Amino acid sequence: MRQLFYIFMSLVVLIKCEIYSRPNIVFIVADDLGWGDVSFHGSDQIMTPNIDMLAYQGVIIPQYYTHAYGTPARSALLTGKYPIRTGTQGISIASAEDHGVSPTERLLPEYLQELGYSTHLIGKWGVGKSREHYLPTNRGFDTFYGFLGSSVDYFTYNHVETWNDTVFYGLDFFNNSDPIEDQRGHLTEVLTEQAVNLIRNHNTSVPLYLHISHAAPHAGGGYVNLQPPEDLIAANDHIAHTARRYYAGLVAGLDRSVGHVILALAERQLLHNTIVIFVSDNGAASTGLNRNFGSNLPLRGTKGTPWEGAVRTTAVVWHASIPSNIWPGLFHVADWMPTLIAAAGGNYNDTIDGINQWNAITKDEPPPRHDALITMDDLTDSAAFRQGDYKIIIGNVEPDKSQFYGTELQKLRLPGYSYENVLLSCDTALVFKETLFLNLDLNMAAMKRNNSNLYWNINVTTNSENLCVPTKAKGCLYDLSVDPAETNDLWSSHPELVHHMVLRLRVYWSTLNPRQRPTADPRANPALHDFIWLPWVDNGENVSKALQEFPSFPLQVSVGELQYLVDFNLKAFKDSLTNYVQSSADAFMQNIVGLFSF
Image (tube, rainbow, N blue to C red; front, side):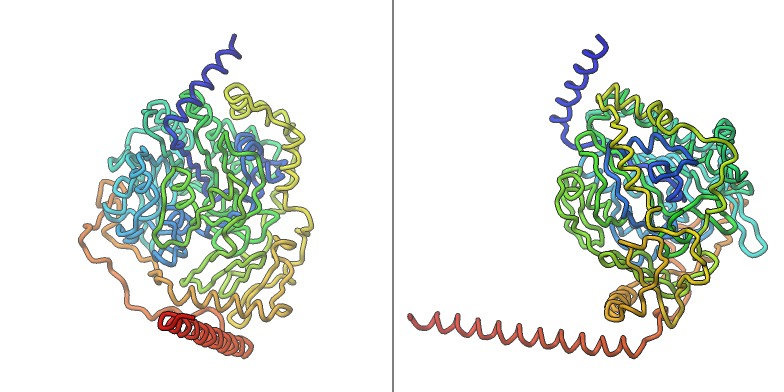
């Protein structure tokens, strides 16, 4: 009888999907999640069964690129543009900094509103808070519940920033624009409860866009960095490294949240027609003051660098109608804007850097993206660009963040869990089985897991002294199809490719909107606003920009590059002249035909 009921309800929902053709969209963002810290990437240390179920039953995007910091990743997602267009490249916007995505930029939720969507942001904003017109409810979100800056304490929801000898601290937690001063509980669980309640109360006659932007597993924004839910600390006792147990607890809480959201969608009979996306804004912060003890292994580097460990992150797309797959294409975070608008049945014709990849993902069409500007930071003077399988990195990259991190974090002190049992008993597996009648094929899951595991052909014990680190005189070049760990530098052996890719970077650099070096505005101090991080600048006040010279390109010009540029220009001139002569001859013949009859 129960089986018949589910079949009947599934038919009802499918009929509804035909009537309301626009899919619901739930977009879940993790913060500083390491590549090696989801179990479908091969980790036997941290279990993420709910995320894994989405991956095994959906589409895994192994070549998903974001940015090295949170603000540029989020601005690219929301605008469809590379951050250099909006001046949001480089380090994330500080809470005391008067900066944000310009209100002249139209954001993804604004376009979805025009398509009839109800739009909601729960969690982190991170793209400007100093002025009212930067805030999410003025940028296309019907509602907002969360924090505006880069991070908060998981229990007090306070954020702390130190500028020289002054410490700014206060509450950063809001319901729309109203401070929330009476909330209690762990931040991940509070945000999850809000998301579940929003789904339960959603008017199903209109499509839903729910953007859940978690703090986890980012380090806390106060003086206490790692703050997992208490019950998830003991659950990770098998991990030898003490701090990593706390990090694993944050990741486990994030995964549990995903399961609760899936369950709520099923309860409201929305799951059949909902696109669920899970990504991380960048890789783990494996080192530094705000390290979270995440691991990007086997990828190189850590948050804040151009290496794969910072900019190549977890990405999964699931919908009941999309076949399970490991998608081979190149996907940039800026592609979400046109891709999701297309998925919603809309069109996007303005000039952006993002590319609509919806048909390529869902209908097996050829991937349309062939290159991507990975990162460009004029404050640190560094940049990275990918063309086909090749990636080039130039400029000033911190050597201590450029090595492998996380190998010392992998040790176990006790036996871990049985992966199959954890996977099959999670909320998402049970919901898929009971609501959608999707039984996980364990052989298929094992195959996808093995193929998503980049440990093949990688020697993570590579001597760091032999690893290329770029300088002003020379960069680094890698073939990622055989060397995703960026161990074998090809700069000297592929000079023509180097010159071509450097030229591409020079063109991008010439168009960048320079990033102002972050400075604190004393008026931002929460002590002036009842210890709450409130907007402090009027919308009409001019944005203060220090006078500065346009930043120099972070690579010296070589003789070989000059020769390549001369040859390139001569070839372009020759091609242009040939085309002109040919077009002139064609026009002359057309005129003759018009005058005479042959």
